[in-house]
Length: 364
Image (cartoon, rainbow, N blue to C red; front, side):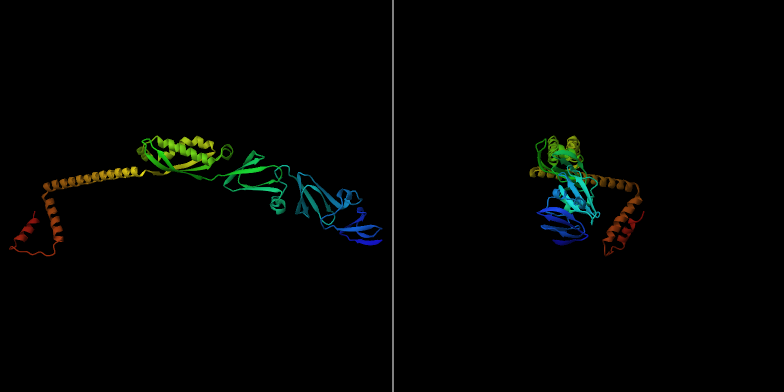
């Protein structure tokens, strides 16, 4: 015989021949021959080497434990005294009653959608993150959700969480901000067989993500090819002189002609323009010579115009002086003043005749 003590926070299991025969609550007990007692702390997690189904058949044992059944497609969130503690996977789980207040929240994971009953902060915890798939879209992005290879819906910017299960999930995203497409180094023959090289630039934006990602493959490459073909078609119909004169019209033409095809890609071209038109060396030299000749001709025209204006002004002045003697005298005085400004010393001789002559200039 052996005497044992079971404290208030303990439970005893009496085992005989490797089988639990009875339960011991708080108190003092005598053990019979061949019996032994296993003491469990009610504050600790329930662990036992014995079959749970057998234990539940022992009288009084079911009243001491909380039995939680979790199916294969479920998870159980365990809260102790209203604080999250852990998550339970599929199986049968037992918890001691008495010292702690347990709350069990079972969630179905057969669908990828997480119910609103699950606190979002819990999903961020490491212990639960194993069961959750997470995907983040930046503020400038949108995405397409595919479930088991089938398009499901459009996703706006934000952080998304789904249960991790046998369902396959994929997200394809696109940047919705304005982007720039460079069509550079395009060697094109004009209508008059002049070979030129053009650098073209376009600004575009994704407006329909379903068309851009679901209905079209590599929409950026397709837009590049479209701009390239329209540019070549337009320039191939123009002579070099027409091209240089209407350079600003190229962008308007390309945007207008390609509008429907661009829309079919789920895009919108906002702006476009020719950055550079590079001519071959010999053509460039000829163009420079033409430009120099034109500028010289313009300079000659301006010179002739100024000479004509000057001559006309002199003629008008002469007519006025012919009609007005006083004006003629004033003009003479003006020239004498200019001559006097350049004379440092005057020597007078000739018995005053020179002075008389100078005086005569100022007489009416």
